[in-house]
Length: 126
Image 1 (cartoon, one colour):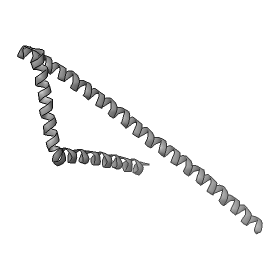
Image 2 (cartoon, rainbow, N blue to C red):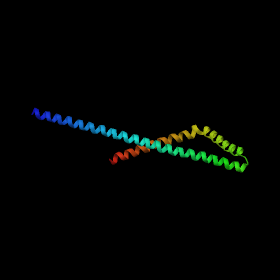
Image 3 (cartoon, rainbow, N blue to C red):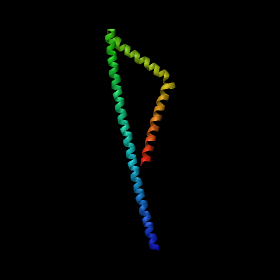
Image 4 (cartoon, one colour):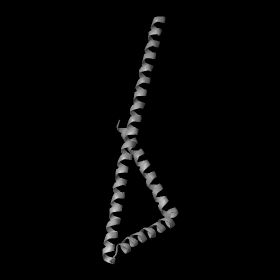
């Protein structure tokens, strides 16, 4: 009977080791998945932001050149564009506390919870 208990304890220890190894592997794969998603999100967001910045810069130069042609001198065209941006900066500064920061916070929270919901749906499928 003692021999039977020894085998059963050995089997239990072996099963526990197998479970622990499987849990470690699962955790490692889970972390790799999370890091990969964060990296992919970071890369795609960076590319989108760079493209928007380039489009904004080229659009600004195009507008300045167009206004220069309409107004007759480069100084007036580029000055008008600078004035538009100064006016826009003042508007953003005056409305940032009331509208802009709240909107950015809401978008960030919504994005976080959408990703959390996607993760829960993936977990339910598995």
